Image (cartoon, rainbow, N blue to C red; front, side, top):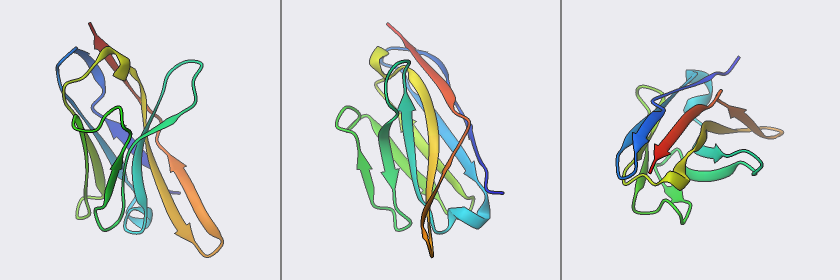
Length: 119
């Protein structure tokens, strides 16, 4: 069964940096559009950043210029470098993989990692 395992969350002061990593099963990574989402209590999960198999990226307006998503196809990992963190970036961050199949798209999620930014 496909798995996504996140790491790298934690507590950081405003203005600091964190790097999140997500290791994916090889069977899904090569064809998947990968992404990072985040969620806070009472709110819907929102897309933070996404990256295609060819390396095209997109970002939420709130993180543009501060966050960078990248993928290492040799290691089946996707990373999110977060700089200039703000208290409003505090959330649980989830790794996501959207895998195309003959019947549509299958979506996978990691277990989530907490990011807390103190003011």
